[in-house]
Length: 76
Image 1: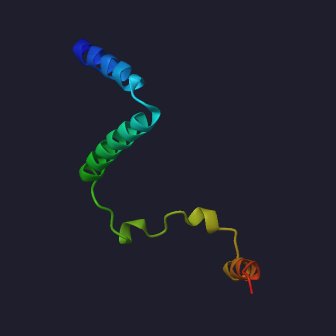
Image 2: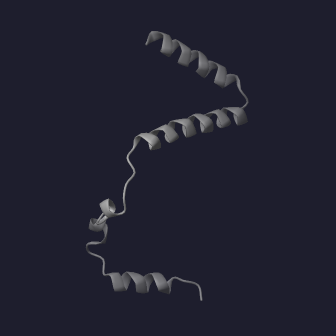
């Protein structure tokens, strides 16, 4: 574990020497790699399991009034 920390510290120091644009590219590539692994590990969700999600947000809102107010804001 200590070796990994030393390697990470060394990589961070090397990354700090890169131009800003290349540092951002490195961050982007690392983020993509980590997020794609996370997506593969998670189970796909079905729409049926999402039914009712967030319903508490709309509990006290009248649907017809909400639509009317939304439409009133549209450009004509």
